Image 1 (cartoon, rainbow, N blue to C red):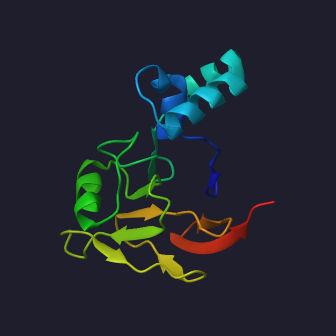
Image 2 (spheres, rainbow, N blue to C red):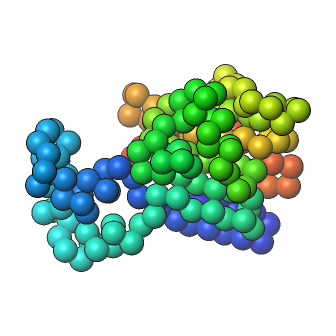
Length: 168
């Protein structure tokens, strides 16, 4: 859920696993993930698989100044933003000042340099509030101990806070 003073947006992005399920990769490849995709396709059934087909890996929300991608903006399905070189490629094609990505499952924060030059990576600290005063890329990540990291974006002066969230 993304929210500002006058806009609420709830969305689900497609990622590489959804692509495996709807693209029936098990017909051409074999591996653990291909077998799981076949099982998921069978368990979901045709109606829910059709709903997966409608999901996009990349969405822009200009009203909020946010762009989201499962991977990177140059490869929304399976690209990675894991270092400043990847961040540079994504910011080069970004149409919004804030880009949210996933796929790596590792919390990350890349912020454009003050002079508009190459982005710099910033250390993620749980509970620390970061002011989003220039173009940046954020990845909420996922914890390895059965807890997810939640990224909260504040309104007005744009801020982000990472924190652990238990899954019930």
